[in-house]
Image: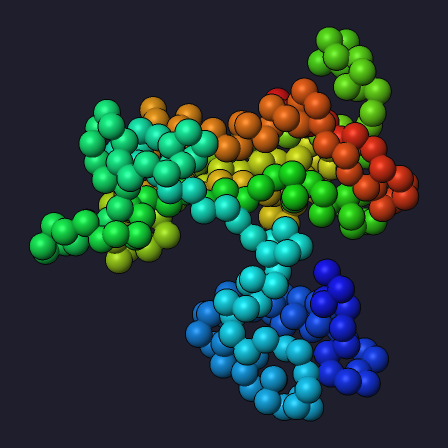
Length: 145
Length: 110
């Protein structure tokens, strides 16, 4: 958390790490920019700033950083035939005993099981974090009354 | 609604949510047989003009394809329902920056 408040570079008064990243990421999301292009953009901005700046150079680092503030999502593996989600008591299983389908993806040609690549993934955006963020904003909190 | 749960109605910040689901095709005509199912939450606390605006609708689940989940959809809704149950029975401690105070937020699904 304290890491977010550090100035963008030594002596920068206008931007800190979080405001710089949020400003750039906002443009990416609003314009529907491809991740590849965003990668190139932040690399260039990083290069333009003084050498000691704290701007990440990869989009994966940006995403990891934003996850601290609840902007991430949970990845939950699912059974290919919609039987169960691999969470709670099924967390560590590799196949669901009743339908015997593997949790992992199969190779299209050789039919080998690709260890570690899930066949189906459910993405869950935790609503509790979202609600917390909603009430953090003064304007939105006023509208919710 | 307010008569049935007076203690819920007492706190004007308690949320009333609506749930909507529909299939859509993310690949347009490149692969017309694929369908992904977003699950959206609508916040009825806001004024009717605002609550249906794109920025105020919350995406809470993304159910992958290639086919629609049809009857098995409850399997996928489980994580969301768990959280909603928590929000209904116990509520969560939240900081409100308009009133500048902590309070217990509860939510119901209409």
